[in-house]
Image 1: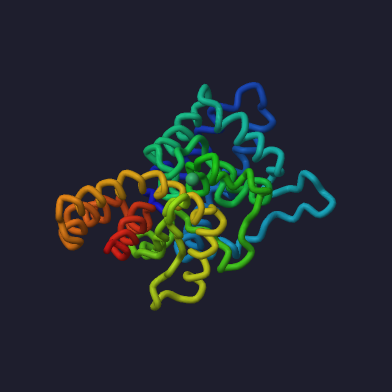
Image 2: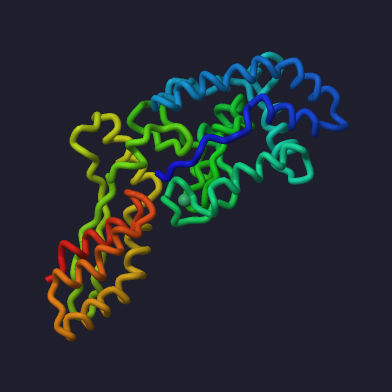
Length: 286
Ligand SMILES: [Zn+2]
């Protein structure tokens, strides 16, 4: 749920770069050349639906009884996968530059988990096994960390509005600007350390679908556990500082304003783990 700017590379430019890299396979090159304009036309459809959270309306390709169906114009699934694997991913190919630019645009922060993980590769928002026509569409390629990798999740994709995870390039600003992840702090006792329980609480005025979407996003990427771990790692330091300040004689309002409020203010965006953590500590300090 971290916003990424839309890729500056168009589908057309990317297809051209892929085509320029196809050497020693004139048949594949000709097929791509003949299909390029049909492919390029899909970019508008993708963006129009992604902008309004309706990518689930694009049906997956029909693979009934055919492992390598025709997907678009004269390109089969295997052609599109081959173009991705051999002429888009490798750094030595002209399109490899686009791959790297898309990956680096995330600035080491995975958009799905809010920067807990560092992106290691690009992932297909609509998996290429079911939507090979988008295999090299920049808008469909999102930098992703190992823990969030969707290709590794059995090629899951949403078939209804509620199950769609948040699209970092295209979804509405409310998902990125308004807070919907919060936390409660449970104090420890004796042997048991304190811990944070993260949960979703989307704004009341959101639609039922939007509320369901963030809940599912939170669940799909296991954010309750991952945020809880992250906050737990910082807890010891904060508790020690609170204790020291109390011993010196600071009251709780002072501790809140000079120790905890800055933690809230420094959270990089509304649904960052740090936001929930410091808000929760502010509510519990006594
Ligand atoms: Zn991640």
